[in-house]
Image 1 (tube, rainbow, N blue to C red):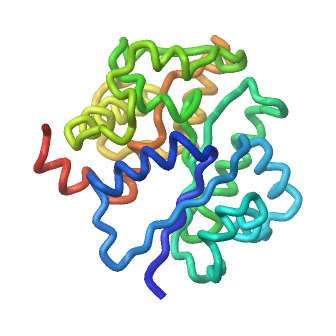
Image 2: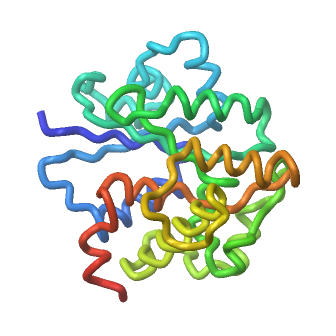
Length: 241
């Protein structure tokens, strides 16, 4: 069986469209089979499943969620999957949301070859579209439902994730890496290496959530891309259109 990489998305609409684009513009899977499943619920609901049983099989959890997951994961067991990456939203307004849960989830899902590696977008996945304002200082409410999707849709340059070009991705990655560095180190410049998800969360807590009841808008997807490839993907070094 080919090397299988499993991507686990919170939702079934925006995230799959983003990664359909990435498959076409950035990824060259070669012998790697990249598949995705959806959880269709917030991260806090996933925590209910794993908190009492750290050895619970994520593949089985996903298989039970919906018919599409059953189809995608048919015949696949945990030892068939070499790496697991999970993509969820912070969504501090969700029922049952607490920062303590986020911290524990980042500790549990901290290695893609074991339990899986968790990536969190603040406040949600649409943050990847949100780089054409004052991105360095752009924050939103941490705990209130601000209808962020509508806010972003009103002005974003990236209405349709399927139409993002390699040049667009280069810009999105660059801005989010600088913002991540600013959240952690207070320096708005490209970091020598991207801060990990736990450091970013700690920076959010220290500089934004606790003192201001805000989160700094940040997409997790650029950090996944850089960490997956060990740097900027080759196609983005060649094509800045």
